[in-house]
Length: 448
Image (cartoon, rainbow, N blue to C red; front, side, top):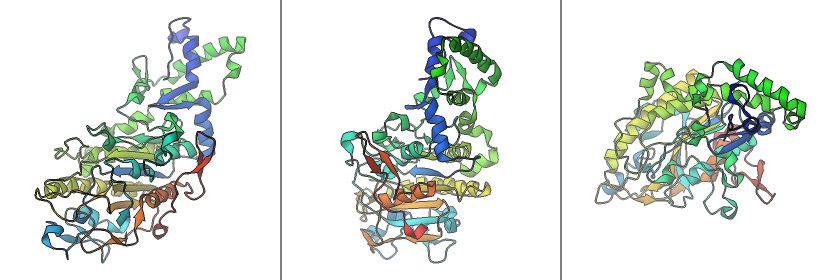
């Protein structure tokens, strides 16, 4: 953790020798960034200006019912078909569930995948965040998520903004709020979490970074201390890149991005707030405001933003839940597409909404659908992809993929490609020193 105070040998503004030496490394949550890490990662990424590729990964925790959303089964019997009717979209020949009229009107900017296969059946976000099963390389810490890989391979766009942010607040069923772990890369590449210990690290002895507008006074303190250290030769061992790392202390860019009150009332109304929260139980609320926050974070320089939206584990009252969650998602997802397009960001930002598995074709006695790992669905938008299409299909009853099965790995590979990382060539070094491929699947050829 960053510390700029110490119990003894205080200098001007209360900075101690010990405290100064701790400035060489500070943390965003669990992510420890040394002075060299920040600037070298930036140099590797070759970043210029604020334009960059990004991913907003919306996890629909609990397993959304594919046959009530993007894959309405009009020819199935009533006990399988359910209550929802299909509606036409902007793309001729593509129909989706009636709960999503706004997304239907923007289908030319979206892609539906109706045939996601390979779910391990766990009630968690692991596959949606990494593209791998839990068991892969588990002995050495497991596979890192796409956010952690982006942080490692590309580094920050802006030294004062973490490259990987997880917005989801902790849920009672904790795996539903997993932002995507760092795996064997270690805690240095974990997501920055606004509600976690990382925010405490952005506070200097009770003074918020947002209030540190007088950068000159703070830096003059370091100048005085530097002269003292130079005389003893201590400062010479500190990498020169440290100086730029100090920018994080006095930058309000991250906190500004997290503050959606900076947006106009009209903009916030377009997204909605997702309230009242219903059917939440042990899962996530329908956090439409986090979709707006995600856009702001990407604008600030974040590469990967993850969040958990709703609780879709509909063993009972499936249709009431989908009307509630689906209608809110329809509003927020559509507002996000419009917002990105209006800002000229849609081709650079990939948005995806998906869950850990699908739900049973047959409706149970409680008007619900149970777990169905055999097939699930995904909705994507932006990213410079060939949108306005459907990939894959399920059989008449929605039981299994009947055409073009798509793995979690292929979807994640596509996200890597959209970030500017070659999924077939990029490797990261594991703790044994061996290079590991970031994913074992190619990107979806249909979207290139």
